[in-house]
Image 1 (cartoon, rainbow, N blue to C red):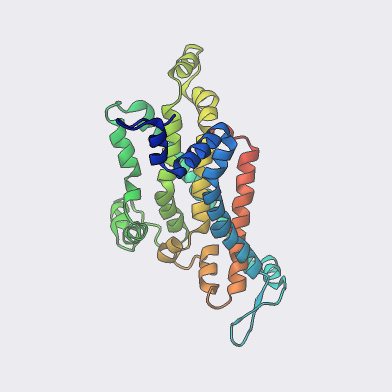
Image 2: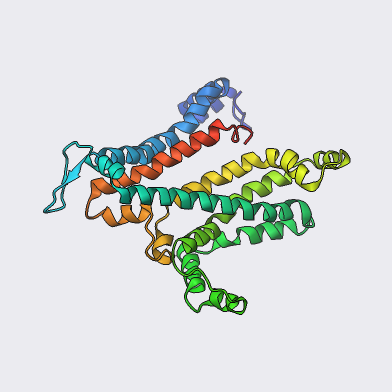
Length: 307
């Protein structure tokens, strides 16, 4: 129905509205009657961007991994060959670096889960309700600082004679210095909020009557945690692990700053981009393949169904 303007007849109001208003109303009516069409209209633009910008770049990366380079000029030669992948499989250096990278990502994920669980439990279940928002803000505060600022701050902390050495010296100990241990430690600090926030949300939504029922049935704290809390919070842990694992697997800056002589896949990709682009592309497909396998394993376990 056309809204009437004071002093105008219905015919005059229709003419004043213009021919385009009727088409707009018909389009709005069609979208209202067809939810799938409305959903397709909303998702078309972001899906096109995803296909062109993200999946397209991955396809270009995978295709360039089958090229080679001129040994004299280092120019890319667009000749199809599987030499780069054969070198990744047969070379013990690349196998060692790949396994080390996966091990670092798994270690960071496990440490983040172990540290984030008690922190999130305190912020979600123990702290006073009025103070919980403040604790959540404190938990996410590391995300407010820049990536390089945090990594270089840890470089100073882990340096020889730095604050960590000074704190451990009375105990007869010393800091780990720069190396693989420092890399795992710094990555754990960097990605801890991505694990803590999902666990905090899941624990905050945990029904109190389940915990009370477990206590009434005589279950101790550990039994309640294993049988009641962990199964309900496990999807949040799985979701957080996707972030921590993927971010650790593709990181190459932290290991350059605090890793010493440690080499991960990201370092090899970075060092070969200008010298041997096809080999760098082949190395870049390794983290992508590992992340896909990890996501399939997490999905197959059923941990993400209730998210």
